Image (cartoon, rainbow over all chains, first blue to last red; front, side, top):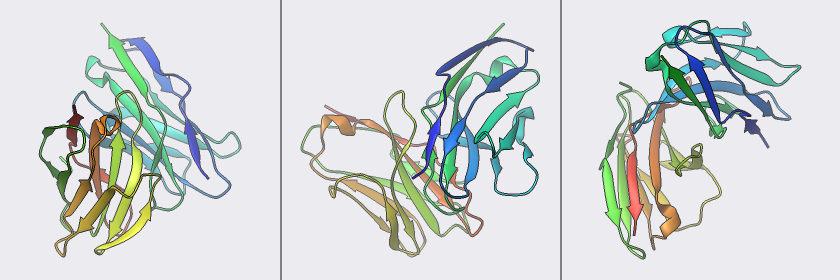
Length: 113
Length: 111
């Protein structure tokens, strides 16, 4: 069975500072990895995904993530955050591209002026 | 915008009632997945439909049921509502490449 751990429930950061949101997963098989963002009172928006190939994945809004198989991690990074990046971020894993998504508990990114 | 729509936006029911939530998938997508997101938690997989057949189910009781129609839209039905069913219900559609795109959700409150 797969599982996802997001160790940080909340990450406060000042505007224009860099940020890293951590995600670790466990699985006995190869997985696909995703980051979704959820703005208040909205659904989930796909930020980026890793299916195969290059371990550095670039997504929307300047975010990127690096797949590290040996450390079973898929951390999300942004070099300079904006107030508008304040939202809940969810890491998710699936066994196949069409299979169910297993989500972490989320990390609230709180960007302060 | 993902092209996935859900209705209604909000819903208030009382314990023991039944509810039906609806989802229209993105054009070209033949798979619909439903998730329950309780307050402060990540979404939990309920079930998935592919070409009108159930294609996987999470750890939810049988009173959670679904349908997918020939146009690939879908319904989630919940019978005998309980207080713990209060949550945001998310629908996601996916096509051949598998990436799931989510709708805005339906907020269900059970009193």
